[in-house]
Image (cartoon, rainbow, N blue to C red):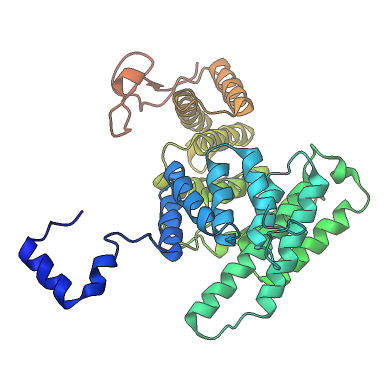
Length: 384
């Protein structure tokens, strides 16, 4: 509340402006102000508080499409999946309160929430593509802002098309065995590359398709083209693909035995997040495969002995194991593979520095000890 005025000033003001006595001292925030506040809270990941603002908006304007979409997002992030689905469905006809043109994001969210029904997910993805392509066709591209909007629309079209390809290729569904699966994936990816030529996500997915077709040379060409579009970007550049996309690229590099680019991509990821469990796992796996190749090639690879590469592999895998435990990471198959690789390295006589939990610093840096208890764990491993 504001400061109380003196009686003299209040009387003087009332005399000059009689209508002021009926003016409320507080005003209800406008809908645009509430929407802006709710959006900022979602950006800050404060979903519980965002829900309070969103519900205030919907009390005043039950058909507000922007608030309904934010409601779905906030419910999704708080783990209320069924309620989130209902919120997004309320934005899509034939729901009586749905807008004439539903936001494509509602279809995209519902596609991701329909993992138990791949056909339904495909329908939502395609509905999103249709809306986005119509928006792209009618978009005014004048000026820098127009070009930015166009790029965002193209990126969303590609993601929706790639989402469909991933469903068609997923072995947990029966779609991958359908006779039309291969041609459907080709058509979807060609449309993606027509919409946004050179899009790295589309090229990366095309490489995965080429791998499934036993066309490794074509896959390699696609990956190199995809990586070339962003490999020289700064780590804070918004055009840099998200970490999950880069991790997927690393997996494809490893499938093709392209170890150097795999390690370069992993270095960039770890420079951003050195606690990423999957990144440590992939780096350990990369060094492990390099050690295997070194053994086959006479004992060395890129001037490193197979023992040195094996030790690097074990260091990474043991770090992954510790992070997996500390973060209570849900990927058990990953941990099982890590343990399997460590066991194989043990059988080869490869020791590694062991990470002691009690020596971890608060800043996340870790102290390493060699297996003989000394502080210098960087010595070369000698095999008998």
